[in-house]
View: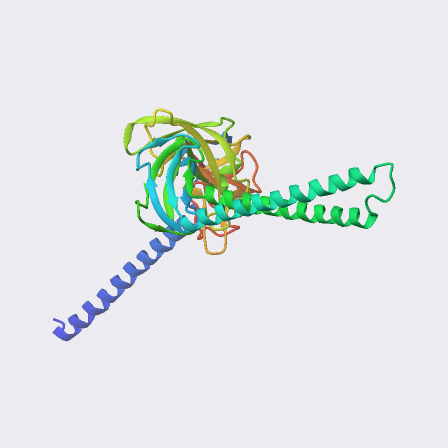
Length: 369
């Protein structure tokens, strides 16, 4: 019978041998799996690039403005004698809106009117004297009128004529100034503001009333730069307002600024809305619905295929079974995809889910969806 220590040593050696064989089997299995993974590349979904017509309906914020608006100021200093209108009143062109009292203006006007009459009388007297002397000088009897006296009267007549015309112009100017005391409506419209009452002191910077022409409203829309060239051929658009949630209104394109605002990168477009029924109010916000259409077909790809980094924006194309990065510019975004521009061709193979981890030159199993 063998001693117990010897049996213990034999058991330990046997266990070590068995463990070593098991580890070798596991390592051989792992190496085999790695070789299998290397021989079977990743399956990467791809698609064929196609062209399609780009159409999109967009909604842009807009604002309704009066077709005409003016704030009437007093042109001379004085006191408000009467204000004949109030807010909400409809007025006609030429209608008197307010009367200003300025006694010094009226006094000056009367003074210059008197001076005009005096200058006219003096001129008529000089003219009469000259005409009498001239007729006398034409008599057959020589020497009745000395030539020097005739010339002196002629020069006096001319001087009085000039003084008369100067007084006439001065009186006319003060007549126009006195006309500033009456404020009249410059166009048909409605009074939207009244800032003076009888007895108020007014000056050249004092606003009296504001008049708006709301029969036609201007719908102003700031159109982003990207959409300007893609706008459709129609010159009418629909717009909605929060005050009428179930109703759409039509407006007609009438004018553009023809320049891009460098601050907002937009062009201002104006549409005219016939508001003769006075249903809409100037100053309200609206939402213009516009249809954007490209004149030619464009490449449209899923948004997931576009990769954006700090340095570039690109898609990944499969060429000769290898990946390559192609820089693109993004256009209009639609529900069906994103419009792109770049060095691409129809039926190019692009990766469906792009990533900057997919390096140029990498390979894979390209599976077309």
